[in-house]
Image (cartoon, rainbow, N blue to C red; front, side, top):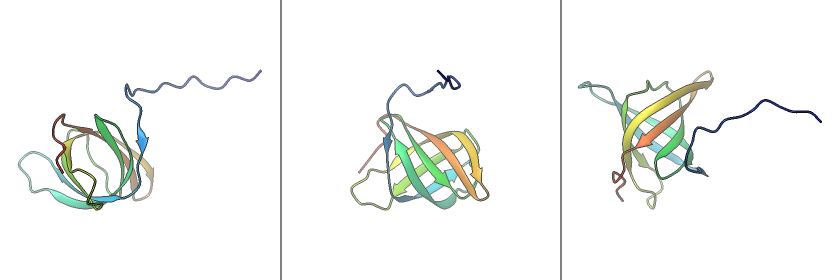
Length: 102
């Protein structure tokens, strides 16, 4: 019997796959924010996973406005950014509880 590496899932809540795009405003400190079109990949009650064409430094605040009118807006902070390929980054976003609004 072959055994693979032990995997660890750091998430406490299950994630649901998401499809679609959103406009994200990323802001650091008191600087003007940058607006980027991102792809939604997954989400839970506490966070979202997105694919971004630009790297997003952990600690960066965000406001996410989905293109689908039935999806709520989300705000919070970036907690992870991993390069997938040239011009593509997987970004983990932690949403503020109670900060989702239609």
